[in-house]
Image 1 (cartoon, one colour):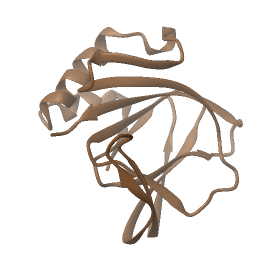
Image 2 (cartoon, rainbow, N blue to C red; image 1 turned 60 degrees about the horizontal axis):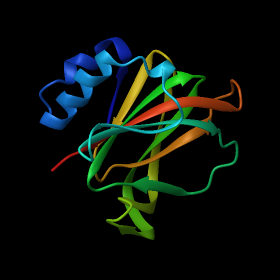
Image 3 (cartoon, rainbow, N blue to C red; image 1 turned 120 degrees about the vertical axis):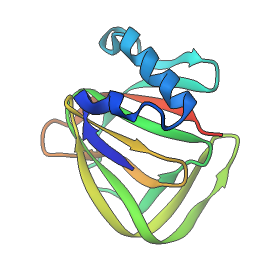
Image 4 (tube, rainbow, N blue to C red; image 1 turned 45 degrees about the vertical axis):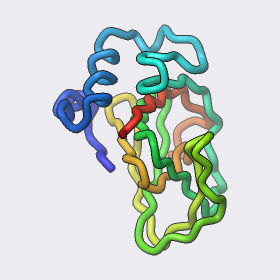
Length: 150
């Protein structure tokens, strides 16, 4: 997991060619002007999803896990807590490659606050639970950039 200030995002160039492409494309796009839904930036290698989400005040024990894509979470409006799961893990929903999605319970968790000034990157295999209520407002508008890591 990487958690940092948005102003430092360019420092992560060089970690993976597809992430480099995503960071270059993000400099060219006004995210606030995009419609809700999926926008392909480079077919299935790099795409983004603009969402409006209701934040969870009551949260369950499950964390999502991806194997093929890293997630870059950027908040366009509002503030949320994103949880990072680690330690001993137990599968609660078997991963499927068609959706690049599975669920796990994690022994431990760490909270980070994502807002207009901060971002988080979750790498494949890292358990995370986004969209947790942060005390300010019940909804957020966000952009999740999906980057294929092969």
